[in-house]
Image 1 (cartoon, helix red, strand yellow):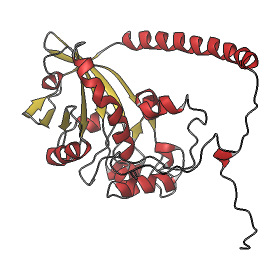
Image 2 (spheres, helix red, strand yellow):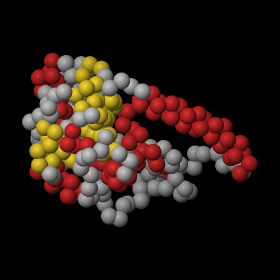
Image 3 (spheres, one colour):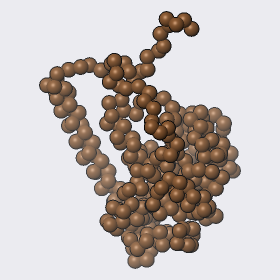
Length: 284
């Protein structure tokens, strides 16, 4: 390349936005504010409808391994009447937790104490053996409760774990729909809609391949304990977890938004220190 040749300018550095006066900015901001308020009202209504869903009695005796020993599903409530379980992608063959789930966990780790003082226990559950979960939890510096369902049906019954046989036969039920039979080109799309490349990259970071990695799925399930009986009240999966992924709530309000071209996030101890500045939206 000639020394006079110009390198492509990073997209983030191009001054693409219109510059206006404060009065013109306010004229554009107020209609958006009205739409944001409507979205908030709609979100409040959806929350009310979640709470009005009928309950399903849980009679099956699930068993978990926890820091305090063997536990039942009722034990995971820790003396409270409500339980939220984050289905953290960490399968038996993983060498590290899913980086996406890890980013979500970074966000909810600090909420656990607040929820506990409002009669809600927030816990993660994964299928990896407890020792693996404990080691990774120490590495990440988290304090939330994390139970292992290794050897139990819990993850399978709540459609966040599946078998190789299910993958091959196309009998996987996830996010309330049936997935097609497994194929090298298609399985990643079922999880991220971005194709196999990014999924393979994430899978490699957990020490697995695409097939093994996607036998675990993310989700949230809610339960209530009433008169000694556990009831399932709600579950959400895939993009239904967006509201729990704290960093995206911030990015959606940043000048460049999500501004993604691939898998850019890492587990929080894997970033360069200090982070490298790859370009600013404010540079000319």
